[in-house]
Image 1 (tube, rainbow over the protein chains, first blue to last red):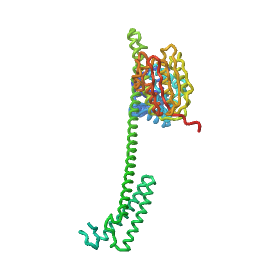
Image 2 (spheres, rainbow over the protein chains, first blue to last red):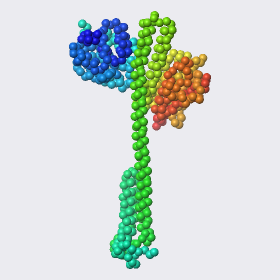
Image 3 (cartoon, rainbow over the protein chains, first blue to last red):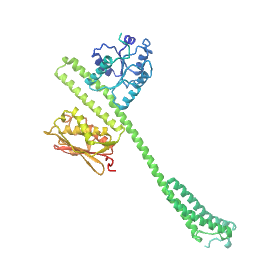
Image 4 (cartoon, each protein chain N blue to C red):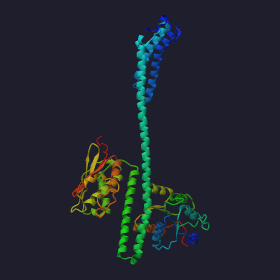
Length: 154
Length: 363
């Protein structure tokens, strides 16, 4: 599944290392029935490879930017802050909306992410209903309501 | 025995021509050198101590040195033949030497004491820095642990809910009840983690100190409580005019929120639950109190009240994480204040806390 979707444009890229958080997030988004193409990546390094079209994603191009990136902060290899910096400091990727989706509500984390150019910062609730609602509101707003700078619908 | 004057015979070990020279050297030059040396030492010590009072000694020592130098001049003129041959012959020599020694010893003692107290201060400073470092490590450990606990907790809550939502037909009543219990416990743990994070944040955050309008803060905190806690409905809240204090508004507000929430929780079983907030100025600071007419607690356990996770009632009777009063205590302590409580079981509790005075508005 990864190999086929990897070559196609993606509407939403979820960068999340925790399988349970990833599953619950994708479930909540799929339940919205927006027909969006979702893709999940487990660490920061791979996320950057995916977006910039580097190995093993050489058949992707940086021009096929995802329409939206949901980014966790605590990631293996390259953490969320570093991914954010890499994306927002490159002209080719800086227009991709990045929503930080983190367990941390620490002011320092929030401020740092906005300073790095995050488009929004959302704290993941522990309560499942609140969590689902939060993710779905992000999805509805950024994938449905908001005019993206990403690829035009084919 | 007679003092060994040269004309009375040779000294036992020295040639008789060298003896007067040596005597002159020993009984005139030595005290002179001692006086000048101790005057110089006094100057250096005075400078090191940054205390100019010992300069008086310098004056006296220099005067004595002049006198002693004069004596030396007399010898130079009349020849070493008249040189003194012992301390007893010329009492000033003895006095001069003793004065020099006493000054040096006294200053040595004072300087040493100062050095030691400085050393002690720097050691205390280093120790304090290290304690602070360790505390910070511990706090950040607590912080990251609390965060990491949220991930599996969200999974437990999420998957239990999914199970209940999507597979309810495959479960009987008991199975569904068990899932509800799992969820309730997840929520308790979630609240616990939130409170622990608040506690850790309140311990680490930078404080901003400003004059506090305590009445406004109490009202604000209570409004907040009313939005989330249905138990506030029947509560009769009285807030006396409160004296102003000084502190961090968001921290004090948080402490008030926990105190009011406790008061509401403990008194909700009463026919007419009453909560009253008062404040008085004392010499040490401004003391505020939150009183309720609720279940109260056994004063034997009063010392446990402000500890983290300490609960004096069982969970089924009164829910809560046991962190609320620990938060109050942390906030008040960071303001150099104190928190304490008085209670009678069955008739009510009063929790007191003190904050610094507002700066005097008269001047």
